[in-house]
Length: 132
Image 1 (cartoon, rainbow, N blue to C red):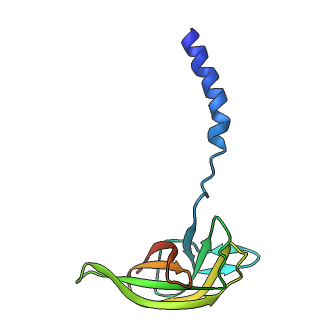
Image 2 (cartoon, rainbow, N blue to C red):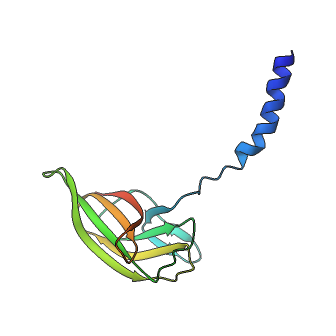
Image 3 (tube, helix red, strand yellow):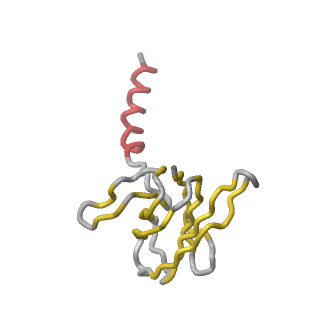
């Protein structure tokens, strides 16, 4: 009986601690068909048909840069590696942590690695996407 009571008390004490754990404790990069200021992300997924997409980044802290780039690497199955595909440069506000980059063009089917890079070409955040 004492063990059951002790376990129950521990669960009551630890439950609020576990509920405070946040899923957003790191930087995210994800994709959607478009971003609307009023409605937010429209059509989020990790695989799309070829065409223009919007890349969304949500950072855990402000970016502190005024220029960033979105770099695409495409998987080459013949070489069994990702190879440079394209690069898009953007001006950003340094005190922001949420960005959306529109009209990123994916024209060939395949798997892509997408990077948000700082002005020194260091990776801030990255993600994978499949174009079908």
